[in-house]
Length: 220
Image (cartoon, rainbow, N blue to C red; front, side, top):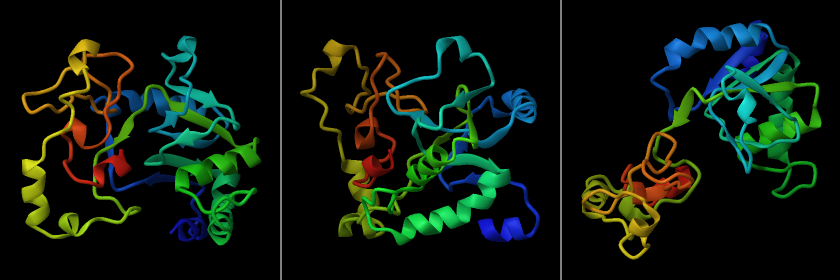
């Protein structure tokens, strides 16, 4: 599909995964983001992202977009725009990654967000920007990258099991840490899976009540 778009004359593409949701303030923020992108030399733009171990500098948090170093890996790829030479290089690069074995020193098979990060690192001329804060997030959804048990593959049974499941959070001392749970023990989180009551705490998987299925942690 990317090659077809390039052949049709596209100079930029917005790549959205099917579990991408937009933030409630998306419409209000997009004019400023579009203006900032038009004034920049961007090659890749992430509307949703996670920077492993770091956050954008505090002084830049109020800017609509922030440049990210090519050496900085970016997790998540549910909302990524690519343009110009980066777009033209993308199909060949993805094919090369898929042709290599896992763990190849020059970049073997990996999730697509890893492939994008490798492309950026190998091509520092491709300027990368992120929306700050993000404008898109991933909702919990059925996995395509892990093997489901027969219980989660069988209609009706999987829904019945999900209704009856309870999180194993009773003995974690969440009350001591100030982490709020609902009456059934599910941890209360926002759209980014952050605890609504305790700073610096994220709840991934079926303990947050957003999907009581065995594949939920893989997606989160």
